[in-house]
Length: 531
Ligand code: PHE
Image (cartoon, rainbow, N blue to C red):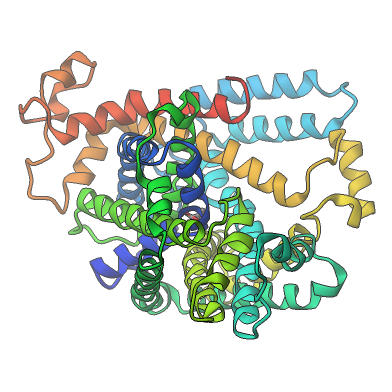
């Protein structure tokens, strides 16, 4: 019943472009260039590629194969091998959480105790299903609410570029346009809420038409457009006098600027950019047919994602440096520095370059938003037995509603004093906005912990043998087999019929059982500030 039997990708390319569309987003276009710049340029790119290959790739393969083997959304995928019951490990884990929750009951702020108790009881009763619901429903929901807001800003910028309202000469002047938007100031609210609505509406229309006729068809048009625009912007940047300074900043290796921290930053970025551990890749995998080679697809998706990130970096930094501006952190880079740089480009075509840049960014964000909406819709259809159309309408409205909360609280909660009071009472502080809170919960807690759970489930519970069988479908058999290392690392020899010493299968199995979980634990402890 929960299997997605009648929903399948129409072609391998459709699947590849849709998954790459999910991966390529704001993370590639504003975050990757910036973190590369401050972490040693090309030196960081090397570390990032290693992180993608060692952590990102094995997890992507794990998610795709678990999705395809079960044909289910994560809420049922984990469950299929446990028969809907909790397992010993999950029960113990749940009891520990309940005990922590009870010890917090008398603490001044009851919010934390409630969260732990609910989680503990869910783990005890439902086991892995709880993990499936967290990664496949709660994580995409938390992300989509604020991602939609950023998409709204981007559409608003497209309109403003063509209306000639982005004609500022420097980032200081740009801040007079951007800060009111960031803070949802009353005078910009109408435009802001309308463009936010339009953005969610566009994604909803695509998801409304389903996998083949909606997501797949739109990806086949949008993704080539995205790359054409990116290449046009790269050519514009590269042909500016002084572009080489930007290239040097972005691409020359500076091993001195590479810190221990950079490795963890690279890993966090690998998770976010590949849309891993948020139900998307697994759900997209559940629509995949058996004859598709998962490993090759994973490599292609990662290749396209990295290519988009590098092209975006070149386009951004060549223009910014050629125009003598400084790259800044976060949203400021694309919403203030980049438009100022394009305005200075000789030829007075700033409006055009800005327009193209923000159309490109809108497309990147849109295909990602579509991929966040789909797991939620899939879940609602199966859980509440409603039609896809109704699910799309309801979920889009809910997402828009929470997005508004996100947009309005972007500066701080002071704009919503009633809610501020409740939050303070339950959690002790309301210092961060809903916007920052969602990003923090999703990026720092849900993604690393979800990734860890997927690695442990696939590596140890579902098991590398069954996973390997699934991965081998669609490959010329025998290409992915194993050896001595497997024996040494405690695997069952029968799982790996062949003997080559350094086969990709061994690497994958070692990664998913040991390397990925250990690295993810480090990344997690780093994210929450323990190391
Ligand atoms: N992968 C997207 C990016 O790089 C972000 C994203 C996260 C998309 C979560 C969908 C879901 O921006």
